[in-house]
Length: 301
Image (cartoon, rainbow, N blue to C red; front, side):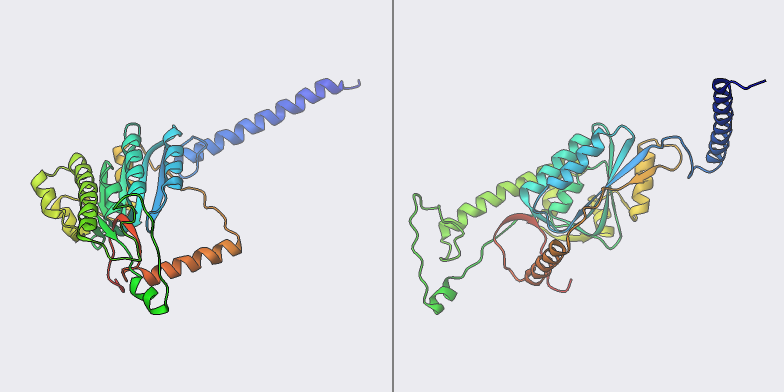
């Protein structure tokens, strides 16, 4: 009797289906025995690293927004290793963290330094974890302007400025600041400092008097910051992830995810490393212009 090819095909499909089902059941069984291997989607904790001097918030905001929209991400850990930087990027990331807290738990893990603008961002989180030796605090604002007037005079160069108002060239490197100029800049940084203090006051369990006592830009170790109420606990990155897991109510071991690293061309890598090296050479020497939430340690620290 000749076998019908259609019936034979159905039989083969049925056999394959049964085998697939059995293999799947075995994998699920062993996956339940070992949580590191399972077909079930795990709850996730997203990690965002904030590294170096803050000059732009775009990439950090983009990653936080991605985690905010991912329903499987139950908590976010911010790994901050930054002395701060420009005012606006610090404030933009801070505002984003406040919004993110409405739907996710946010924990900060402090690295070697999380000061000034780095601390500004941190105080928006649900919980702040520092290492005992972390340098943090530096609740303050700095304005610095380079002066090259004497250098230009030595090489025989002169400048002419035409302006519409007396303060239009405040901070110009080719003339000394007047008392009125300094008064204007001082008023600006005092207001920016007030914004910093308001952020700390609204997020930390500290009185206004406590904040005023530490708002002289002094730095703290992580252990000192714990006593001052600036951080919540001491521990490393792994401990911060454990805290985030508990706060989010995640059962079992979560999947920890990191942003995809962008690949740089060799030319871009060399250029970025060169710029970084030059910046490091000038850091702490007083070279630089502008106003920022920035901790500037002495060279060698």
